[in-house]
Length: 168
Image (cartoon, rainbow, N blue to C red; front, side, top):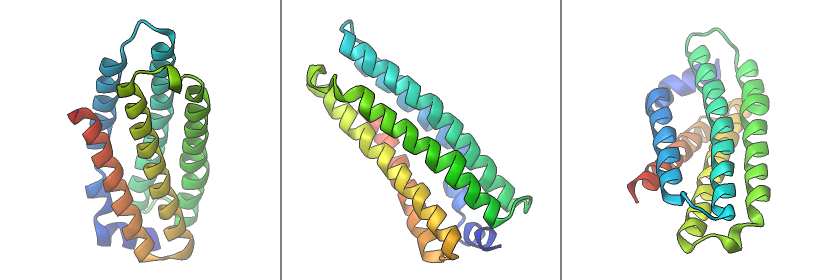
């Protein structure tokens, strides 16, 4: 269907190598934990919320990777792919993002400047991935190759953000 064409035409899967993304996610978590290791309770809450988000992030990325692979293998339809995006990717990501924001809002004033900056960059990263997933869903729902390209660009932007978190 459309997604097989769109993915093949843009080499989306090549640009979003699952193993590379998992390495980046792991590296981000390790670096973040190293940055915020703290004896104060706010730092510990922040650390726990990052780990909680990381668990959901991994689950979402696995679902996304598997659905991309199945599209390439022609074992699912565009409609099934759209359902996976809606239910297993976007819904889960939004829930985890909302939980992260609400659970860290109260501790922000108590975090160090460095950790407040880190919080801001993490939120930006999370919203960028969310936008990428939503653009991908829109591409599937409307058979719009331009939306696929926009989604790919957002995925690359989010990966660059993840990488920049480990470079600091």
